[in-house]
Image 1 (cartoon, helix red, strand yellow):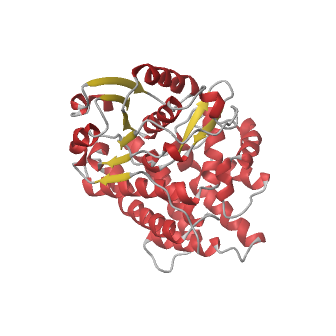
Image 2 (cartoon, rainbow, N blue to C red):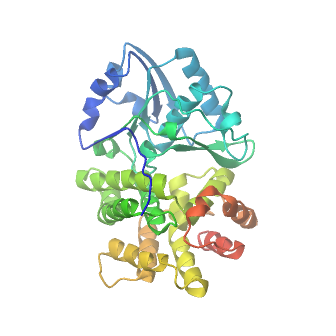
Length: 380
């Protein structure tokens, strides 16, 4: 048995722990850059950080122009630490700014697919990541997906140096999130537990973490959507998100995320909504494909375990898990891909791009073009 496991330098978790942020940040130095998404810049305590502060507000998914602009600001300001407060987009922006600021050249020198893909030096401005949504798990991952508007695709920056120095996860920061965001981010978190669990790169450590993440989502997702002030449900989903990030960073993802990147690039739709729209269909197609032509694949039994964890029924099988996923996606009113902007004329192109995506390398079976297209069409 061999495996590697990498994560943030330190994880601080629990309701109310955000109050410790000023003390945590003070250890890095007086110059603080704050990357804040949405209304996060108004959170109490941020005005206590450092003797010199630069606030960069973010909105929407990270894009090459926005990240480049933030990098220019960081190179001029020269912060000792970057504090990211917001959803996965804000955290991914901060991680990108941190590593690019300590490397030469610009983002196109280092980003995959649309850039030169040059390796990043293992140097970064330290990042303290404080998520305000339960979804991306970006506080413990070593990459950042970034949209290239010019090419209409998402590509990634990757480096071990992009792991945050500290992940500060306080479920209370997620309480004000609207129901739609709770649903879309929650399904992203759940997907990021399911896909590593059935991945070809799964290991004994990620198995335990991903399984617990699925249990937490089964307990908390519907409750957090129904009552955003339910702190126990919010804690469940913060754990699911954290555990999903830990799992994907060390065991890879699969078809849902392989598809989410090109579809997100084409439509600009929210990543979590795209994942939610395809999760049940991708699970069903994976299972049926293995039954047809790879019946000895150990992931078949793992999908049975996924069903048991989600339904709470010891006799559940993979088909029951698919049914559970389809039902909760419908109940939480997540739109299909057509409502998110995907046209049927784009299905083949998206399927072709997904088959080349790095996330597909973790999928438990190599899917054909027709099978990938089936996932998309069923999810419209």
